Length: 205
Figure 1 (cartoon, rainbow, N blue to C red):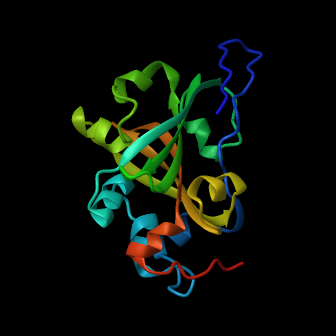
Figure 2 (cartoon, rainbow, N blue to C red):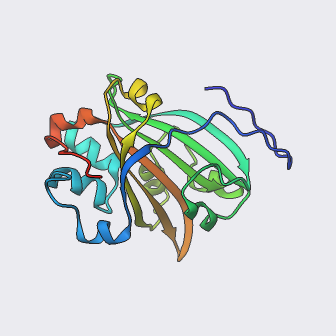
């Protein structure tokens, strides 16, 4: 992935991140009450709507360590970056990070984009090749994962990256630390996880 980084006001944004083109999406009310099991199977709801660490969940499911391939670390300034509107809760100038979550054998299980206040990212991601939860656990950071949106949709780059046909399920959430938004995260999971979680069921328009 080619990235062009410049701190000037005339920022040239890097290659786009992989946002889903949703055929269905839900908000906080859907997240709180849960989805009908005919729309999203219970095991998938635990992964998508629960407030635990997805990387830890993937490790437990696969019985393998989950590794991170960092594909983008880009300064985006004050640009909204086509991110969920909650990006405004993260103070700028901002840095965008994109990763694949995979097993040691190379099986990609998830994709994530996160947005951070650029001046503080090194404080929380001291080793940028680690999963976020592992980085924050190392420094004993207390967090609250506040899930705000859920999606079912398509993405040609993710079909290629996962080597799986959509639709895909994804979500976005804020991490809170000491009462302040720390980072906004957008995650998409591979249908390969049906091997462990069973069928996803189907998106409903």
